[in-house]
Length: 130
Image 1 (cartoon, rainbow, N blue to C red):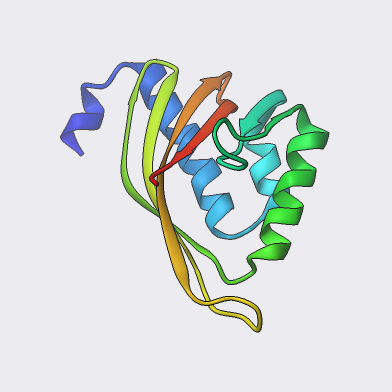
Image 2 (image 1 turned 60 degrees about the horizontal axis):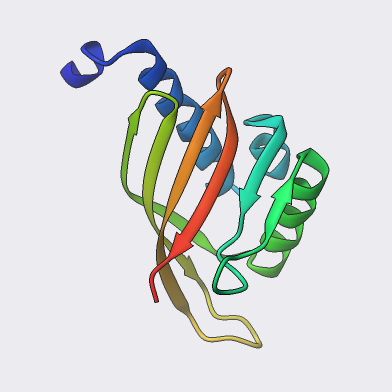
């Protein structure tokens, strides 16, 4: 891509780090998700409203992802748009879950605000529509 050739190195590194994270997330691979995050990572969930719950550090964030993927084994994460400037990245996404014995299919759309440090996700703040 020509646009990538003109991008500053920090922005390029940020996009690469978030892409690694997103690929691991799409596979529901908790080990790879955590390997893509810093030791002192921060994740702010979309739930409960209005501010969501905040998780700090590898152990707390890992525990959240393990429970999240266990509760939605058939869910699919789709990136609708992604852009970065320096150490910040914005991802607009669609998250779909498949029906199971207790729920109907559905989806939610949202945005993640990422901060990347040393090639890893240091912060993921999640927001949803509605």
